[in-house]
Image 1 (spheres, rainbow, N blue to C red):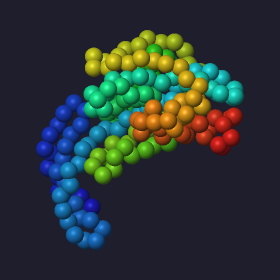
Image 2 (tube, one colour):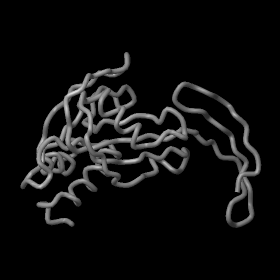
Image 3 (cartoon, rainbow, N blue to C red):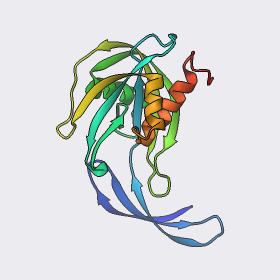
Image 4 (cartoon, helix red, strand yellow):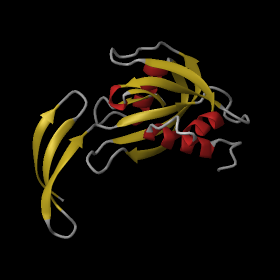
Length: 183
């Protein structure tokens, strides 16, 4: 239970609070908590989902914190905590991958790092894609690539895809794919 909170920092993406909390055993202490409005991420399914090996889009994106580029699915921060995560997923899909979804399906929601942040990412699949207009932000350096879903999952197994939200979303997408045998 939270007993008190003190805002230490407010930035464009996160805020940092120092919370005094009561733990389940009755003791209390201070925890640093990064507050985040949440995010949405989406697996863009380019080809027929019912085919033997659907094709998806992945982004090769520069990430300063990772010291280079990562393979990821399109994702971004909710405009505010009240934004519908599906709307955020649609927006990020258009901005980062340059496609619009005719249909979007919820996969799951994951906590990113619950030891120090309240950030949750809502994961989706996007189907019936149509070309749209890319709108990368100034700090975004992104290339869009096509991969068969099974090939993308093999990239996870080889350690080429290391982004947690992408791994979780690909796992859920692969599990749902009609021809995967993992349903």
